[in-house]
Image 1 (cartoon, helix red, strand yellow):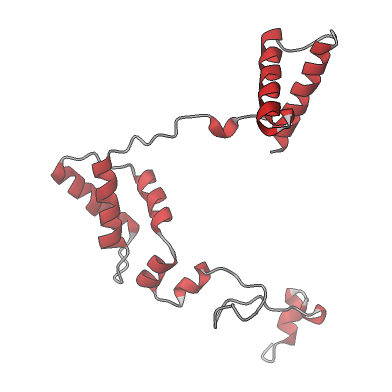
Image 2 (cartoon, rainbow, N blue to C red):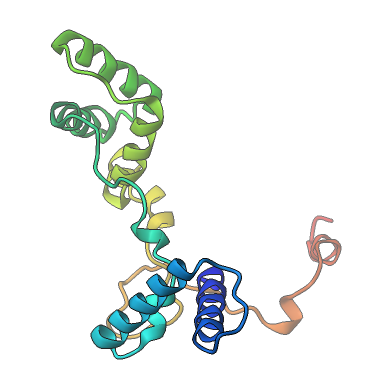
Length: 178
């Protein structure tokens, strides 16, 4: 965000220099494009500065190249073999998925894509199915306060008193068995 603001400020200074006939360090065509973007943002949003901000987030190809059959089979295998109480390793599920893709003649996704999709697939419910409900507590939202709408047994922030903030050496010295 800071880089985008710096770039917008630099563009604005170049526009002003161009308008007043001072020396510029960019091509006149670039500055004219920035002026057009400034005018368009001013008409659209009421603030022309928005038009000078980078559009980095809009760059690149966002379309997936993954065939629909591969994606469906991947979701099916994650549901049927990964989100089960037996808790198979992800590598084993990927190996089974690749074998099934070879049988059906479907191109399998790469291992990196498999692990990325597995990370998106792994939710609190999947963790509860695989490792139990107590293991899923770690993925619950953290409650910093208690009120009437807070669930019964949340992970609550412990209040640390100033006398409890001590170093490791003091901690071990305070233990009864130390």
